[in-house]
Length: 181
Image (cartoon, rainbow, N blue to C red; front, side, top):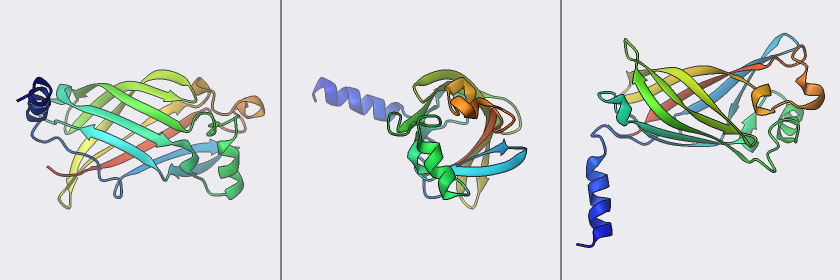
């Protein structure tokens, strides 16, 4: 057996028993914010998630989430076109946003905390979000939300920096269906 093969086998065997991928067809990544005081909801149609969550030993968990910014869904087609422009996501230069978890911790009552780095529009910031582990219909769900300052990432530059027009806080909501057991 070659050393590389032995190393790969050891890595596979070391994965936690309850490691799981994500069923993207069932999962969602949504957000909400206020524009001129009116709530607006949206989502991303395309994202990739690589998650291995170990509820018994959260510190052994890992997660990477990659969002395709051009896949944004908003209530109006002109808002979708505007979101791709340089003042907002600048999807031509920054087609992806990425969150890489660095730490998972157990809170209480089926709740956990994930911390890591979000890189959006070329800006990286440490973020932390509480989430719940739930089971429904034979699927394990990781569900949570966190407020994000859009201005901290340069999202909504120029005339859009006015928080009376578009609020700075965007509430990101994730619901990930873990595949397998």
